[in-house]
Length: 194
Image (tube, rainbow, N blue to C red; front, side, top):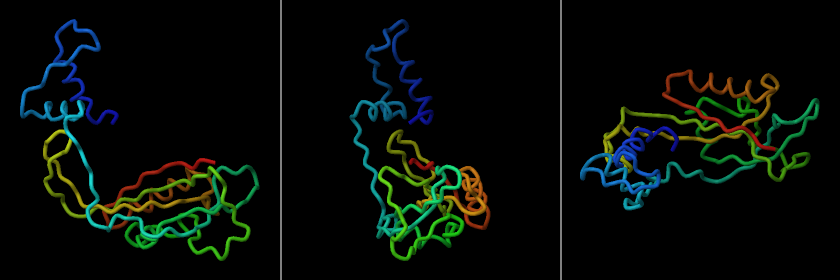
């Protein structure tokens, strides 16, 4: 969880006696405190379950799509076969992307000339569309309230296009297109692996 709970981890270490060995048992934090809630979570006393609300976030049916990977050398042009969810395709208008922007074809005619490479994972962009101001919700890890916003996220494979040949160029183009417009959207990326 990186730096997200850094202050709470430091506070738990500060509960130990001065000069205590690194593996020494940490005394309990005060009952009812945020620190105690987090300490119970770390000790496995607090069972945390995250559930999906409704079926709106389920990916739906998987469909074939084709793309040209970024990691091919020189003038080598190959089209690889991968998958995209039907829900992601239905989210094109909400996310501000489409086949041309992503460098994919989600309706390839047949599979002739398309290669499904074992171990290939296409570059992926996950676009989140946020709505509303948020509802006050208690954190399952700390017990503190935070504003939980309603959002829908869509994951898209993307590849090289005629104008954006490199991963960074395609990524920057997607970032620009998703961040513009009237919708409150965010985007994250995972690079491809060949």
